[in-house]
Image (tube, rainbow, N blue to C red; front, side, top):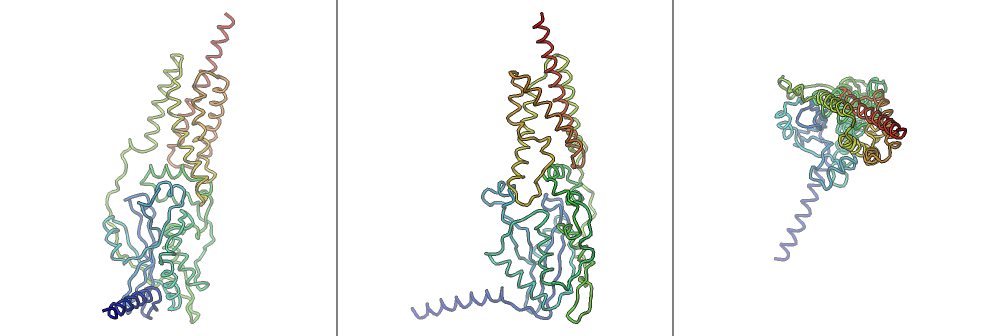
Length: 404
């Protein structure tokens, strides 16, 4: 009995060893092929807005059909929100078959395109080995960086590394437009997400990038790979993409645009008018409400602390040097309470004077499309001017009383 158990144990070890060897030491056959899968943008959530890229390796001789997908993460990870904001949330590469993923993208009406790549057997094997090495549990996680290391740049870099100098992408260093502008091309149908993301990112996002840098977007990887060439082992230069096919074409469904009253610019315009009317009436009756200022500038201060946290905590530099901090100044919380306690008119005058100056500067340096932020800046400026005028009026009244 003991001998049988021992034999079973060694047989199990041998089976595990063989399965590991098959998964990570497999040699592709000459029939193997490599393709780039590009999924179109979607509307299901903000992460789907920019599309997705995967590498597919098919070897009919070995019975292999595997997609390598970078950019997965665990929604249930401990301290998910904090890690996500800090940029320390572990992202990972996962593997699946194309048909497992296709159903999801078809259900969300997202295009699926496949580009067959003209890689040599050596390049295919090198790419496959690198992808398998990346997929090991100890290697699968990486630090995601929005513009610089994401689900599109990783496949690009893996393919470039496997091809070496034989791969030529034309005009790769040609300037295009800023990272922010590329991003906004994909957020037109999501005005609130567009507003939030533009407020959160800083000056590094306004750097004019090259064609290479623009490949943080899957569609740009698709376009530039379509124009690339590769030198074969016999010296012949051929297109990198031998064939392109659309595996799923999305239906032309009517776009579900937000109703006008829900657009950020409209919401902030109504808010601005309402606060402007209230401010005028308060000032006309001789007293500007300090409660309203505390509510407004407390909200502004909280937003400012979040932006400052993103600047300091993240290491991808995307949220650094953020001009939105000029009007979303974190120190409004708690300074607004000192400025509105009625005990120090000199401090109140200085506080609202400096705030008004920063708000005016912000109107000229804002890069946020849509104008919603500028409408809110003007609303805050109205409150600053009203408070400055109120302080002057109270000073004049005190002077008259003193002389009387």
